[in-house]
Length: 153
Picture 1 (cartoon, rainbow, N blue to C red):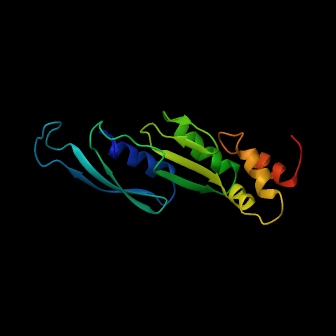
Picture 2 (spheres, rainbow, N blue to C red):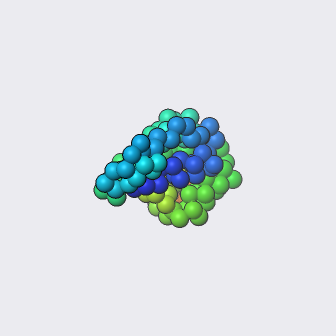
Picture 3 (spheres, rainbow, N blue to C red):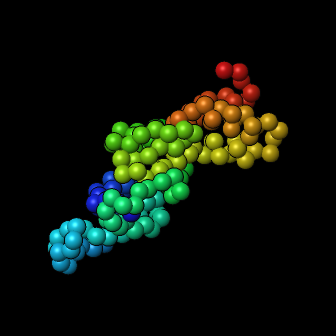
């Protein structure tokens, strides 16, 4: 649910993330209390292959971390590219790989190296990776890898 920017947000997402696109845009067929004929009401879009619908419902409903996109990244370059695209386009940083875009949608930019470390059956690896992640905003893969090895900071 967006105030009035569903199409703008969808077009931004489609420009940043692979396998993303903007589909049907439904416009108001007539004037209504908070808008006029032709205003965008609904936008069908895809983010990383996930079908979504954005609704321009006014300022009454705000986004929260209860819904987020998790984007898995292969390396630091990809992590930085997505993180910077969101944060430098009016978004804001949060903790542990989370950020929020200018429309209030939450994103988890998560390197596969972190998820692999967190799922490691090797004693201490997940705990060290988790402890390192807890100190970060954007995930630093080199620091995660150092923690996995047990290197002292």
